[in-house]
Length: 287
Image (cartoon, rainbow, N blue to C red):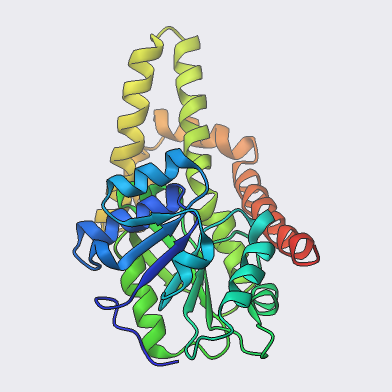
């Protein structure tokens, strides 16, 4: 498959949910892709209208959206991925060149995608798996990527350019199983921080602050700490030490974390999410 210049590619999205909106919004905001080259297939009218409001083409037909696509983003729920892939593969029988596929369907392996996308003529498109996360909606995403067999350097550059429109961290991993680790780290990771803020607010409220005050303080603390992590040249370990005075309040809190097994709690959580991603891939790949 010949390399595709993103500025001139026909780009299709199968699935018009939040991640599709994040990607399309990033592409348009940065002028990477013109509106008339983007088509989104989405069955739900509300989501479809949101995409139409951005000025891109919309349809309810997967095959119509993908018909002339050079690059196709598979953004459907994992449970319906097989049927969608097989529908598209059947529609490409007469195409000379197959599109490059970017799959953000969680847990679905390259083996499954390749099998489902293989047409009656035995051809299968090149596929890149991507695990983005929800801060992409604000242009602050983190994404892990793995390239399937045959994906060229030019195609990797194409996908990188697209993802950098909404991801501040875009990391290619060396093995496909590491996508599950990315899922446990950054894919599911935003929820860990949201849960932390939930509990901080609840604790402060129980000790006398109003919920509104606690929420404002906790949100800004989370934001400020995150900004320090991103903008500082120091490691998280050093930043933690900078805040921790000997025998002070922060040290007391961190010792409480340690006594409660905080390190083990975090490790188990990341492993649980990673393992569930792997498990879903096996279950849905056999469906």
